[in-house]
Image 1 (tube, rainbow, N blue to C red):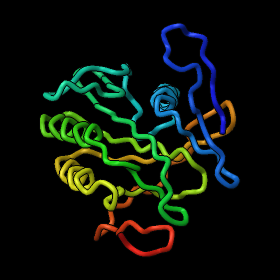
Image 2: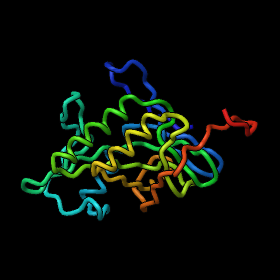
Image 3: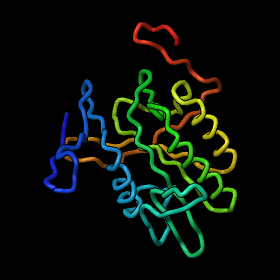
Image 4: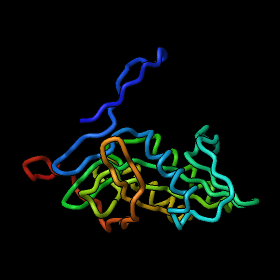
Length: 198
């Protein structure tokens, strides 16, 4: 486990959980890190799907439900709304899933992105895979079925899913290569440690 330490007097706790080692892989835990890493990668031209924009802004208010989009990209009157999600849950050999718990906030973000897409803007849900032992990302329908349903509706409305694997090392996280994002035909069942569905 790797912690960072802050001496800020305004913080409730001095320590922040940054990452943990599972087997041979470091897994990025801090949910605030992916936004900065993705923003830096976009500005450096390392995300071809999000290249060609002149301006990148962070934490911009948007939508009907008083949300903030992680990144707003602009070129002239072209807007691209990007919501970044940190993926840490492995659900099988080489397979990661999001979310790892029911997320009303994540579902709300999908609704907001859907509205932006229907209004003619570009909207992207960016899955930041913070572990090296997985090779694809899928929705965790067995954990949050409503998120999975809302994601499918969002994609039908024009929201684009992107998934990239991060390179997570002690004291450094960078963006690596894209990985597949897959939508299962049927929702998987959650399995207990003994292998029985529940």
